[in-house]
Length: 107
Image (cartoon, rainbow, N blue to C red; front, side, top):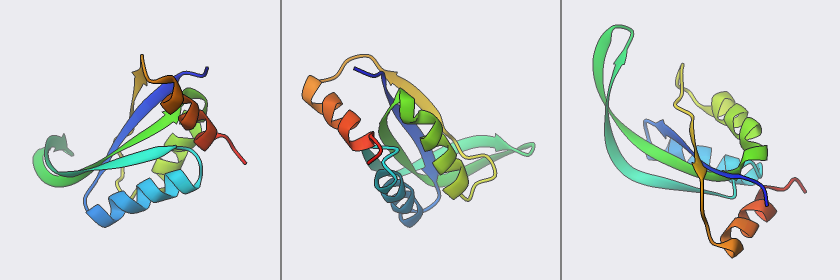
């Protein structure tokens, strides 16, 4: 079986989060995307410490599809430097992981 990843990004509205999630699933670069409720992000940007309300999007994908998923997020995100962080999945149920493979395979 291929390697698997969860990939995290954030955006500043629930509508943008859903658009990113839906587009990635429709493009088959992610099998699933979960949108978390409002989070508060504190970060340094252009020399200033900022605080912002954001929604997290967590994509489930394969390592093989990661380059296309990252390109999709960068192309469709309106942040200058969108967060795109991939974390390896070390264990998972066989059925779920087989589903991820099936849903991210180009048709």
